[in-house]
Image (cartoon, rainbow, N blue to C red; front, side, top):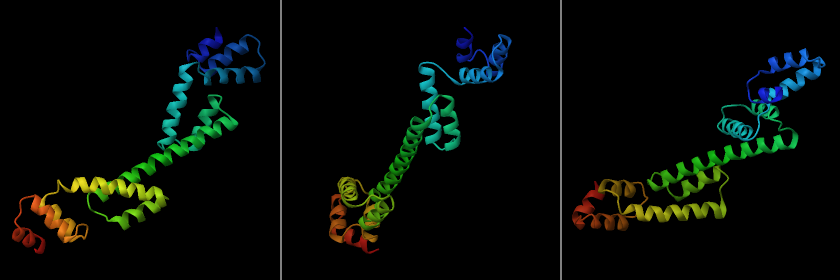
Length: 189
């Protein structure tokens, strides 16, 4: 009964230790058992606590030392604890890398950077070769279909920055119902 109350959080570690001492337990053992009972949870509670700790660690809200200490209280030690820490590190890096790739994609799709700059930015994230080529091909397809919705000012900006050739810019302006003379005038301003 005492253990159930302690693991449910009804008794603190100090209260549990005091009761165990009153029952005649050896002081060192009473302290260890009370601490274990107070630090352990049963069933889904332990899993939820572990998940919450992982979220805090992956989000950068707690340090590795704090994460390890909390995992230790949940009986995750040694190799099991190392795996959880490494998994948290990998998830944090993956999340950061995905955000960085998304930022590069947004700049590319908005015609703020060209192919060479996008590849250079991806290389800084250790995305090279086939992986970078596949991303650039995907973004190129998205860009081609997105160009159709550009305004005349956006077409001019893309042309001025060298992201659209003059014939491509003239074609885009023609689709916006610009006459050839008006389109050339706009691009030459």
